[in-house]
Amino acid sequence: MEESQSNRLINVKFRPSSGEGFDYSFDPGQLTVRQLKERLTSNTTIPADSMRLVYSGRVLKDEDMLDLYGVKEGHTIHVVRGAANRASEQAANVPPTSSGQRNTNSTTQNSPFGMNPFGNFDQDLMRSMMNSPMFRHILSNPEIVRTMVMQNPTMRQMIERNPEIGHIINDPSFIRQTMDMARNPELMREMMRNNDRALANLETIPGGFNHLRRMYHTLQEPLESAGRNNDQSSEAANRRLAEMLNVERPPQGRINNTPLPNPWAPRNNTNSTASLSNTTNLFGGIPSFGLMGFPSAQMSFPSPSSTSRITNSTQGSSQSTTPNSQTNGASNATTPTNTPGNAPNFPNINLPQNLSMSTDPESIRRIQQVMQRYMTSSQFASRQQMPQSYYPSLFGSPNPFFANMPQLLGASQTSTQPSEPPESRFRVQLQRLEEMGFMDQAANIRALLAAGGDVNRAIELLLGNTSS
Amino acid sequence: MTKVPRNFKLLEELEKGEKGLGDGTCSYGLSNGEDIYMSDWNGTIIGPTGTIHENRIYSLKLYCDDNYPNNPPTVHFISRINLPCVNQHTGKVEPSRLGCLSQWKSSNSLEDILLDLRREMANPVNKKLPQPPEGSTF
Image (cartoon, rainbow over all chains, first blue to last red; front, side, top):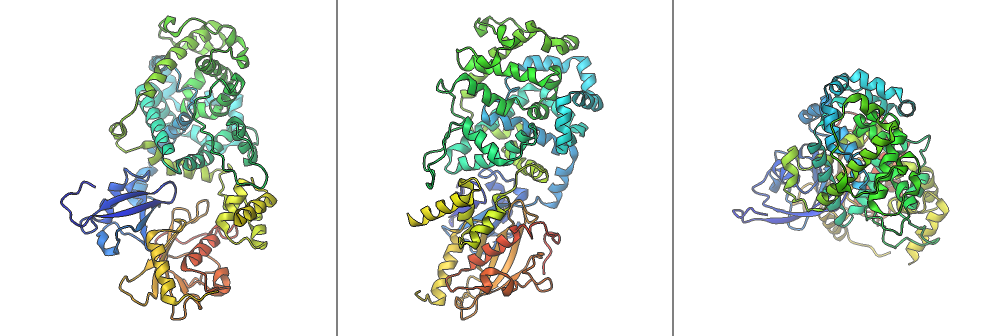
């Protein structure tokens, strides 16, 4: 757009395989395909190395000039994510990088939903904990960390059910990466903020919501269901999501044309505290997340249930003034009524205290105070607009979260979790529809998705669609 | 049904391909922009997600003879692919084994063929078929 020296600027539409397209102007006589890709990285989430440009039935070659392909004003170039180039592929295979990235993703994956349980955890507390020599020693030995995790029966069960999670734990470099993240709260906070921002931006563009929904299905859901027993049905997950968002089923035989709810909208008093803590459980209280993002936190509170109880009550008390009926346990009895400003400075703690903290009501109370105080300040901070130029400075790449998407996507697809595309999920139903003469597969899939896999309803939808 | 002359139809398809009006999973265009008979076409299919073809882009050649659209085009894969409907020696798509070619209608388009092939890739029977290394060609 800024190339003022060129006189043959054409405006071309770019169409990613997912998400909304965008326009970009360039001079095809001045630019190689590779250069174009590098310029496009700011517009897409695909790094130049794994970006493929397809135009008119041809894959554009990096070294070619763009005018070779006869791209003209108003034409469309498809932007596709392919396998990374050989060289960068090798780089990505170096274990520390890949595991570190996975770590980043799973940490930040919570934050778009605004309920990262440990994101609200006092960073100073965390840092002092992480910096205590004893802790350091323990954590520097991945074997010990692993044993600690495995000693927790909930964790062990989960790992037995989900070998891919076990794999992560067994990866010493992953654990080390996580520790580094925890030790450097600035880094972690910035990362989560960036991703929040990126997701908010995504949501504002048309079609962005669908993209987010897809992300939820491919990333969040498999991870989430990993923490649950044999809960693999997408039906049930859909129902849960619908419940959480207070969505009602559209009337029979109709396409749902009411606007979809915004899952990130602040939950106001219309939603009771019960549903509030319910959502926290859905997204935050899942042990797998605690594990992926902050094993350290998990270990300082040996029982995951106590951790989530604490988070629950903090969430509850900070978002509404009504007493949180869900946290009537020991922690609620000691929920502080004083304002956050009165909270005492939390002293540096050393390890033994740390480990006994979860059972000591006094320390729970103090943690809550600290967390509350942190939350008010962090909420204020996150409201402030982040300039776009903020992203690259920290991580080198425009957006680490999206840049790392393939790894995570790949990881979840090799797993046995229900991340199958609708084509194969609804195979039987699709076949039946096709036998009945509904030949438009895209429409069939849409109808099946809307009907939750029910062939009869899908037919109704399809028929209603064509007749109207 | 009204009969659309060959060149009108192909021009229309060309515009659709260049402007990317389809669903974005397939792309097609003339191999030679100056070819006034619009016989030789390139096509690409983006491998369906959740299959072994994911993250792959398959290139094809399509040839529309003088009787298009009454006769279906002949379709060849350039990228090597293992699919039952593709001849493993020549890369030719066997018309008898691909629904939209065996039951060709003059209203069908090149995009329909590509989409049908993509559907074949995503077909549960085929989606896990071992595939030759990416980048190899027929």
